[in-house]
Length: 216
Image 1 (cartoon, rainbow, N blue to C red):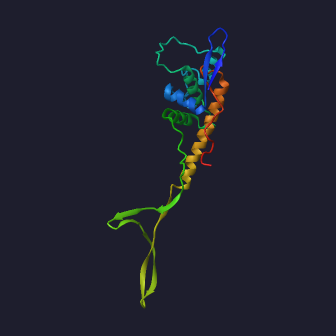
Image 2: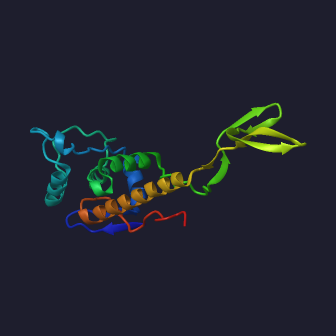
Image 3: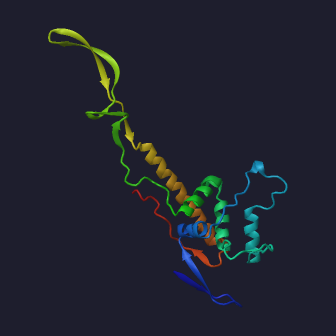
C-alpha cells in the first residue's frame, strides 16, 4: 500500500504504509539501524548531552533532521529508520524498558517473532532413562521396603517408583506466552508512538498488529 502526499513547494512523495512489525524489520534488518539507549539514571553525569526525547522533540519542532555536517555515505541508515530506533529505545520501564528494546531490535534484525511454543502439549515422561541391549528403560529408585508373603514365606522387597516430569513443563509454556504478550504490548506502544510522532518522511505505520494470542 502506498500513500501519495502533496507537499507545498516539493514534488509528490510516495509513502509506504506498513504494519509495526514490518517497519521494525525494515529499520533494523534492512537499514541496520542501531539502538542508542539512554544511560540509566545512576549513570547520567554532566557531559552526556540531551536525551532521545529532547532530540525527537527538537526534530519535530524543526520539521526536519538537523545535519551536523558529518559525511553521510550513500549506504547510511535512513532517517526514518533512525527515528524508529529512537522510539524503540524510549520504551518505558512498565513495558520492559531497555531490555525489551534490545529484545525487539534483535528479533526484528533476525526477522523473527517470539517463540510462543506453538503446538506444545505437556506430556508425562520418565525423569531419566537408560539404554542397553534390551532397549530404552525408565530409571527407577527405591523409596522404601515392604514385607510380603510369598510361597508361604515372608520376604522383604524394595518398593520401586519411576520419577516422572512434564515436558515441556506447563510453566515453561506459560512463560513463553507471557513473553510473547509482553512483546506484543510493547509493539502496540511503538505503533502508537510512530503514528503520533509526525517525524516519518517516507514510511508510515498502519493499525496492523501481530495476533494478540495466536495460541487461542
